[in-house]
Length: 395
Ligand SMILES: O=C(O)CCC(=O)C(=O)O
Image 1 (tube, rainbow, N blue to C red):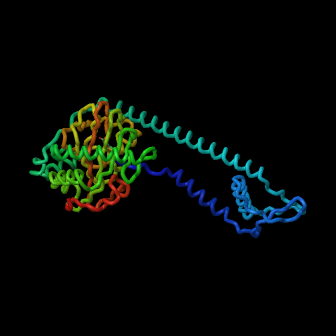
Image 2 (image 1 turned 45 degrees about the horizontal axis):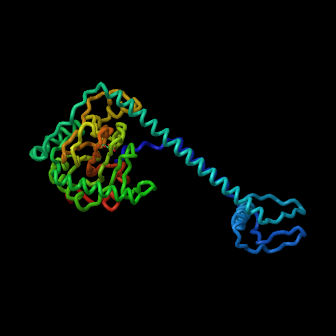
Image 3 (image 1 turned 30 degrees about the vertical axis):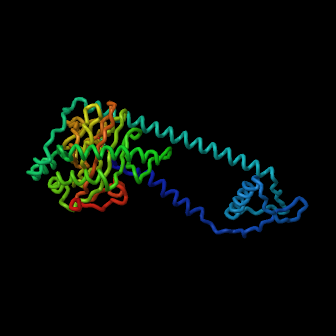
């Protein structure tokens, strides 16, 4: 799922403005007229060049037209009596070879540079996670305690008040075991299909959202049909009053609808909020377990109360690597099948590393608080055809 986006460094913005200025500088009036398709021979005559269907002629022609274009930009008067030598087949072949060698070198250089950057950023992320784990090691860590969906339904205002303070709640039996099993089978089958469709190319954004620590972690956008739709309607039905109380009423809009899949070996994510700090809540997210989530399967770790300004400031001031925000008590969402953790998207949290031999799948959906400004509304994990289409009242 989408984590809070970092702001573009002003250095980069400055650079792009500078290149705009450069662009203006190169605009010059064309000073020469277009030449006709002739070339001079050694005896001084001008002959028309006939197009030749040989391979060598292709780069030669490209080179010649590039040269013409340059001539139109750079006004260099020819010395008196100067006669350019004609292009021959050998010139074309040599230019083609140079062109090919340069192209291959550029591609290899780009690949080496991209690989290097990816490895460096993965290393930096590993270092950050290690620092966070160390900073959290002395903190109180408990299982996230739950309340049943029926208890919450009996007093949603009380549950909403507790949610205001902690930014977090656990709702037991948000969906039935049958609904969870059906959706799990659907997610597994759809993931296989989508990975086969993607092949060696990158994962297509129509079906996959962005997620921290990819590799053996996927954020699969769901279709509004079959088991996914049934599970959503069931969860919303069971927690409707709570969701309405925390997301500003029945006009709250569905803004995420996906499944998080974390396979054995997936790494712990860095602690992060899904939305950068803002005064008011804008999104409420629910993670529903589609199988039991045991301690070694990398349950989500939440820091209750960290959705407020003081926690975000402390987190930022410590370079997201330590300080009071990470030293605060945390809660681990080991869940039974069908249970849900529900949280304010400003809350600090992370997916754990999956050290087990089992796949962990969370079905998730989020509602945008009615009247709020969700900075991620255009890019959050939901299929394009569903974006902005459903309110709580529709489900
Ligand atoms: O995998 C999880 O439990 C949480 C995932 C998460 O927080 C994220 O991908 O932003």
